[in-house]
Image 1 (cartoon, rainbow, N blue to C red):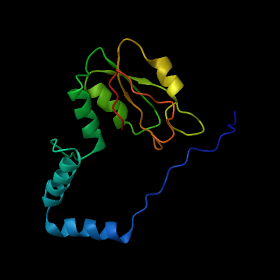
Image 2: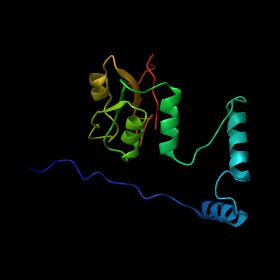
Image 3: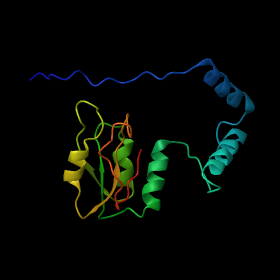
Image 4: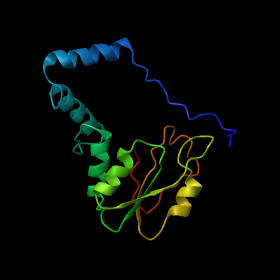
Length: 152
């Protein structure tokens, strides 16, 4: 069986000289994590968000798990996501005791298909982790919902 769609491409990161220099400065400082650059970043983000507390984490995996826990998601709950993601997305759902429910992607945008998300919603659905490389710009159909949504 052959597909009319091209192979799913992955993108190469763009890293400029300023980024390399900034990373070098951090490495030379002796602080790999939780140092003065992190504190400055958290302070800037807090200011941007009107003084709300801001904390950074070491990975997207950690932030997804914390977000699910803060939202009270656990045993008996379902979280809709896509299988076109790193395994950590489904793993954090399992880690908090919930069940991952996979919705397929739109073959054109390669983002999670909102129609398939809607079809997957049940009374046990408590969150959606879309993991979308191009959202929300391609999500013109997306409207606010009373349900919890965690965007990874």
